[in-house]
Image (cartoon, rainbow, N blue to C red; front, top):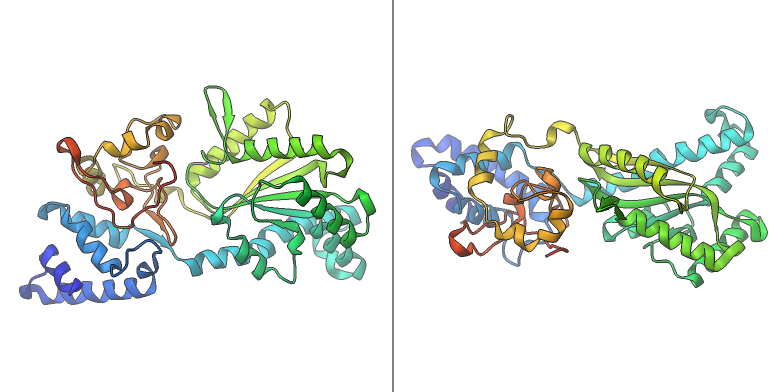
Length: 374
């Protein structure tokens, strides 16, 4: 039924049965393999039904451009794909870093660390002195724990950054038991883990000269806990901070690196000695939509837009220095959908739902978004 409705909407007539057959095959495949798994589809509505409703908002002459955008430019990251990035995080990102630290301690080359039992023991202790902190639900700490059950202790993984004093003391006690350093055991490396960043703004930003974002919050929490607990606080004073996202846009990586340089120089009360940025998947710079490379969908995003979307998110948007939401938050203009939600940095045509008051176009979402800011 949904395929028949799509054929009617798109004008795939019986006179051109080959096109309909070709598109039916593609739609069935992508629905089954990826799109039907989107977590926010309503009961009884999967991808094909959502696509039909979404396409109907466009004039007949514009539907081909909208459909071609979905078929050729949309990037949908499913949970199995995200799970592969989570599984690769410790062996491919963390392990080389900690092995290099162990090699420096041993005064050998990194590939020689595991050639002796002593080297393996040093690496193991160094890895145990690494703390992993989830920045949001998207950090999928439960999956991180399960996939690293033989590598990491549950006592070095914190599901959220709001850690109370009792938990800090418990982390310190378990660390001392495992590494045999008594009350002097400290975490030397801390990984802040999140699923996706498109602009870097949520993680760190400056608004009217005031630093905001998750890193600023975490830094303040560590400073407060350190002052409260004194020598019992389990993070070293010169710890190495690592910012890791399973998925990052090219724009976000560049913004994070730039803002971190400024923050390191500007923050008088900085809890960490140094910081770096890593990601499991770096989206290519060319993924971002542009007027020159994507004129058809760019034109649709201009015409099929309701400014009520901006007004609903105005405070959030003005912090990013923007005056509309046609191309998503921070003008990221991404064609990206994650299996559990659509980033507001993606093209708003993908995720926005509005009523169309005052004569504006009522926007209809293809992948409905759960919004934290509106």
